[in-house]
Length: 117
Image 1 (tube, helix red, strand yellow):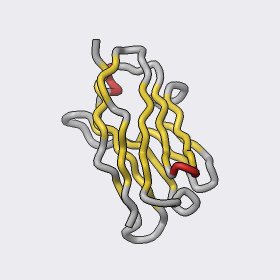
Image 2 (cartoon, one colour):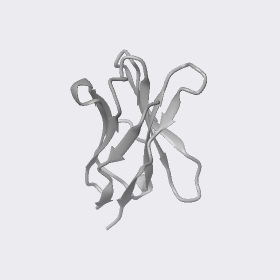
Image 3 (cartoon, helix red, strand yellow):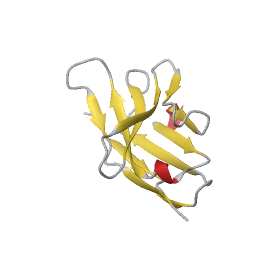
């Protein structure tokens, strides 16, 4: 069982920055791909960024160039650095750990990000 705890959300003005953290319950990054997702009110949850077990990163087109995903293996933590935030980035952001085995998908509880002046 993998437990994930997100933190770092909050209220920020347009153009500002936030760094989200996702602390895992153990050393899982060598076996689990990690991803950030978000869900805005009234919308489906969508993928934002991901990092593979080999360290390769990928981003959704709407955040490319603004967001950066990274891992700190020593701290068992994955980060999402968010710059140049826009009002449309307002959502609950979730961390996910996954690997290609049945039942091996784990979600955190989410952290609220609100971009507003």
